[in-house]
Image 1: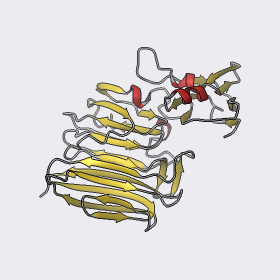
Image 2: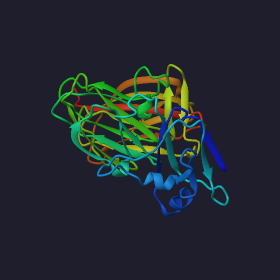
Image 3: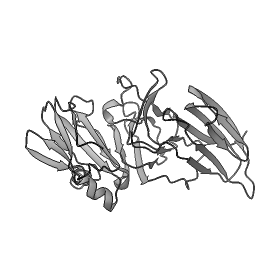
Image 4: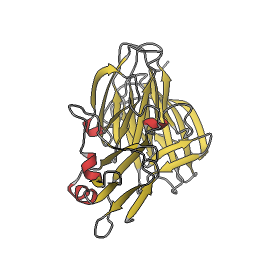
Length: 326
């Protein structure tokens, strides 16, 4: 825990967003973590900022600052206590700075509408995001970043959660997000009239039965941004390291489970996929693509994906779909 942090992200002007894991304790702690605006000589608490939304909207509000060489964040708690929080600062030079939509999961229920600009979700807690199926075709690029790094040309080159052109009718998708940021960019140039409906839940809603051909994404807790090409990885520093991550996908009939995995893990701590027998995956930043037949019985209707990291350098990301057999 520290008493002060600072950033130069606002040198050209910026927007600042925040989100907290909601509880009485976290509220008390984040009320005493303050963002200082030197131009206005004002302080705004992380908690207060996290509760702000644009008028008559589900979209998150923000602090906007003019060009400011340095912005300080002060922890004024007696013992410098902290709490789960997400603080996101976006330079005014960012692409989509004026047009992107920003939400947090507990307030996200976006009714069906076109999505001409990127949509970012900011959260201090894991969440499930669902894009409902639609009659019109669509294409989507999803990355575990903010809208300031969603373009394919952005230097961050962050991990791609989804990159799909659905061609025919849009089957929708489900993303289990274990980090603070997710951005969806729909291809409005190719499909200008396509509409999307989006909702989210705090924590993971594993009771959802995956639809045939509907993509699913999941990753290990704390994973924020990585790239096979650059081997970069960013994680939340406060995430628990020795957890059991377990995702049980419910199935109702015989299916084929198709998966595409990027993993950094050792042989003793692999990513495991189990449907009465266990498939294990480990290695350096290794890409595994496979399909696996799953047969249901009266007593078996679940596929379990589990992961116990062996070190702070262990992680995985998985894209998966289920299809009819044959």
